[in-house]
Amino acid sequence: KQEVTQIPAALSVPEGENLVLNCSFTDSAIYNLQWFRQDPGKGLTSLLLIQSSQREQTSGRLNASLDKSSGRSTLYIAASQPGDSATYLCAEAGKSTFGDGTTLTVKP
Amino acid sequence: EPEVTQTPSHQVTQMGQEVILRCVPISNHLYFYWYRQILGQKVEFLVSFYNNEISEKSEIFDDQFSVERPDGSNFTLKIRSTKLEDSAMYFCASSEQTLIGYTFGSGTRLTVV
Image 1: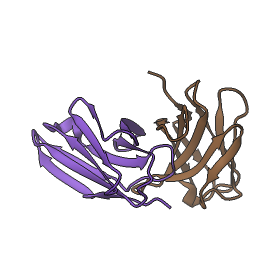
Image 2 (image 1 turned 180 degrees about the vertical axis):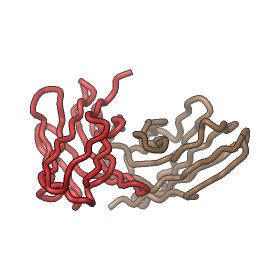
Image 3 (image 1 turned 60 degrees about the vertical axis):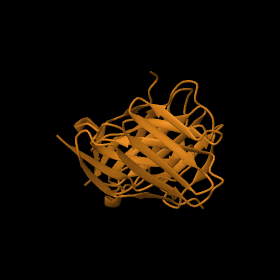
């Protein structure tokens, strides 16, 4: 059974800083990996989907990478803004496994 | 951009009552899912549904839960006899194909009193 772990559990950074969120998974046969954002009390917004044949995906200030051999995915956020404050979740796309999430706070 | 729509946004029910949570998935999507999130906890998988039958379910999805696609557009989650511990956000999601990634609805907050 796939286990997904996210570290750190919480992260606080000043505005403008670049940062990296980590997602680890136990089964390297992962098909796709999806990153989501969740604001307090809200639903999950899909940020990036990396398919198994890809190594990374980019959308604006976000870049996600996938290294199946090491069982890791990272979400890189460039030039962070207070509006980026949220919980970031990773999951094996279309499967049942979610990480616990990293709660990001970007201070003005 | 197509959305997954969930209704109601918030429902309060008395313990022991039946509730039906409703979802309208994206129209060309074939795979449907229900998740729940207890306040402050992780997103938990409940069930996946394809071709009018359950394809996978978790240990949480016991006999008090059921899902149905009553028509071509709706996907429902029924909880037969609610318990206090059923209080949570319930999210519906859909995907065009399996393992391709999913789109989530904004959730229904269920409060059992």
